[in-house]
Length: 415
Image (tube, rainbow, N blue to C red; front, side, top):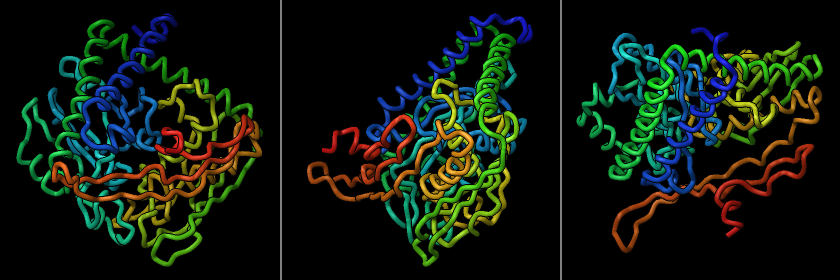
């Protein structure tokens, strides 16, 4: 049965089922994770990709995580091509293999119908610690990625439901809080397994052919929605720039420059004029850069429009390796999910603001982050506390004033 045979109600039901699945995955993670950065700050994301890596559904968690997932799926799929089996679990955190940065560990569970791989159920979670030269994963003194933590290229942790305890022990030994890390990883895998079970139930109910046709219809409809919005913007070539004050190693006024060409219902974002890569950890991995570009577009379209592969089909990206937005290995990149990701999005939004002034917003203040290490006097156990409240406010939009702050400070009412 092709897409033309699916009635709109069936398509809508499949779309909402997929969204419900990723939301349930997020609830499972929230309720079972060990570390404060996950169960309090909620620095994790859940998503579903299809077998080719297209983003099918995501929960409303961390946009910079999810936009990079297709490149991570591609990396795992290529490395294990022809060897992926039901019951497997894969891990990845290496930015030079499709990830954002080292603290964001990603767990992948393949979902099969018979012998055919149809989906990936995915959890990406920021670890409280990932090893390296300093606690918490953010090392402003790093000049190469090995100083930022353990690098995990595509790796199989479970093979046909059998866990590889030696591999788990090797990874856990290289982080500061082995117990909490293993608890968080178990929560991640459990979350992805929830997604697997719910997807299998969906496939049992509708059958693979109808389910995949429904996914195609959802992605195509989202593309049409996005293009209809972009088509209302004024055609032209626009330019924007955003700046990071310095990289911590003497390089000042690190610029991200975006040239955005809008024609019809499509956008081409050219970042080739951005600053050469720097010594410090504000460089971006390729996947993180692509995610930041997608994030900028997501901010400019309707909130009700789903954010999936169809959303980003109107978007072409041009960039140059060796720049701060796409660094060459072994450059450090840990801060890139904030800076220079924030500057990438800001430069793009500043560029297209004349084309869609009713949708653009001003930029955010630059972030200051702290990770504290200490010992609990009651238990004697060490801890790492990530202070996400150290964030400034956001710029205004045509809808009103910007937020005074973001993170736990705002959620706690300033306490």
